Image 1 (tube, rainbow, N blue to C red):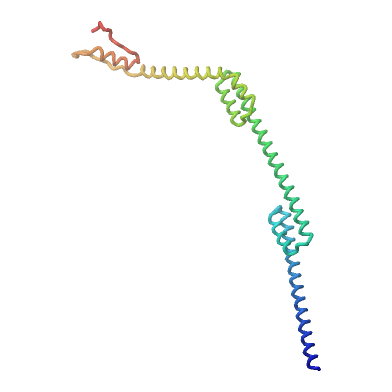
Image 2: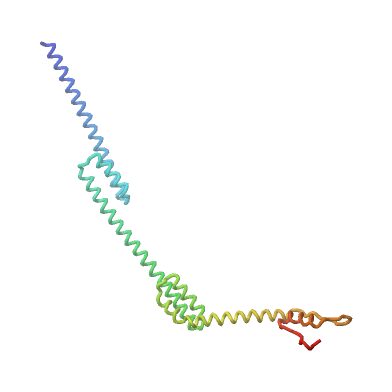
Length: 219
């Protein structure tokens, strides 16, 4: 009857409306995903241009969740790996070049110190020469020429150090003796006093630095 036909038609219309609504929702989701996917890809591209590979990879991983089968995402990821490897190789080369330059500079400084030591040695200043060679070895422990000269002049150096130590000791003793000579001598008067000769000799010994004693038979 007409009533049943109308009810069936109404039900079909409702189903059709729900289908269209579902299609609209699905299309909206797809449009949103595509928009978000493009946003992630665009951000990843910007990060890659600035060599921020970790941030770019993070954006691509988000894009991969949205579109697991999108080949662009995989291409971007492969490109990032290549860029990262190239950057690491370039950094390694720079570090090697910097180390090589530093090594050359150290070698030049050690050579300069060694040559200064040779000049001093030829001038008879063995102690100062050894100081230069030791300085060269401090900055370049494998500086063979400095080590060789140190080994070959070891005895001569020890003799020079001993001579300098003796000279310094002698100078110190002479300075002390000069100081004693400059010390005013106390004048003694024996008038009205009974002086002990031993006390006089003791005082003179202190002033002169000489050991003065009285013989056993003297009074």
